[in-house]
Length: 113
Length: 114
Image (cartoon, rainbow over all chains, first blue to last red; front, side):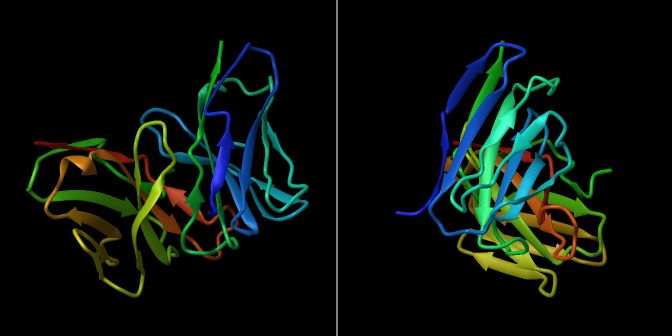
């Protein structure tokens, strides 16, 4: 059955280390997104990609990087330049940007010690 | 500046009563609105949506109302059940916008007490 997977569910890293969060979808969706959720905050857009080998910055892209080498995969790297990396990270996708609904993965909780 | 606002961080309702969650927006270019439900440590799941050309959409216990002149939408849950306890996010789409296609509010935490 189709869906979006994010791994791992929980991730711990030491301050100053880069870390990559995985997002895979088998829905044949062209568009993929990364959001960050903090307590009391809504979902804030980090990066999005409309098609393979193309991606655009969202509202809070500083300290993050992405790649889109395959349609199914959109990994997010949290670099040491991100000042407050501890958060819940959500990946989403839809058939194409502009579609009504985005489908979300289960999320990854990143804690930087 | 927040384009989608959910001004009530939390709401507590008795089981069987109506829950009303509110959302205001500022951008008149939004053409589609969605409600997502989110449990702790899980991804949001789509609940119900409404096009800007409509003023009401109903799906079982869930109804969304849109007042374009007031730039306001609301989600009604009748009757409320304990399993409805979650955070509800309002989202809006600007089809021609340059960013990703959904803008989310900060969410309202609904608690339904037995």
